Figure 1 (cartoon, rainbow, N blue to C red):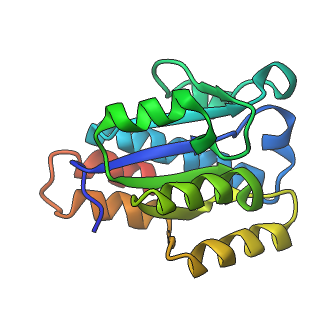
Figure 2: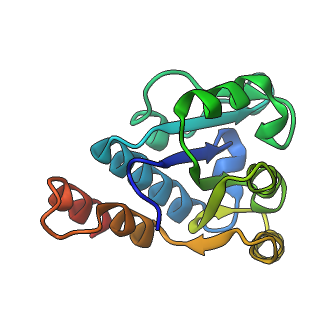
Length: 178
């Protein structure tokens, strides 16, 4: 199971116009926002990425307003090919990565795959990822599952991290997922 001591959330490229045109964009943006808020309540670090931000724009405001620090800008589809990201992963000391964002079949897939290849535990939040088409999302999810990158959901991963109903932040998480 993923734990608050070992987990980190990765928000991949939920930015600009693309964030508004992917399949089920409103749900994805809402769920990523819930995850970010839940991770902050649980003191789980969040790494957030932006693909070519000067061209694609910044992270969706509904998410960005809850994030602290600065995004890691990238040009490679896989964040694992960016030195700043690798340095942030190492500095976090975490071994479990929860991956969200867009597009499932490109940047999410390539980042998750390369994290898994480096020996990390990786799960993808199915209701917090998307692509422009549902078919591409499903292909990305299928390929990740075949690699041992297990699916999870927003609610499932938050409760997995809580582990107990008497956790100090149970009510905070409960309000997020309601």
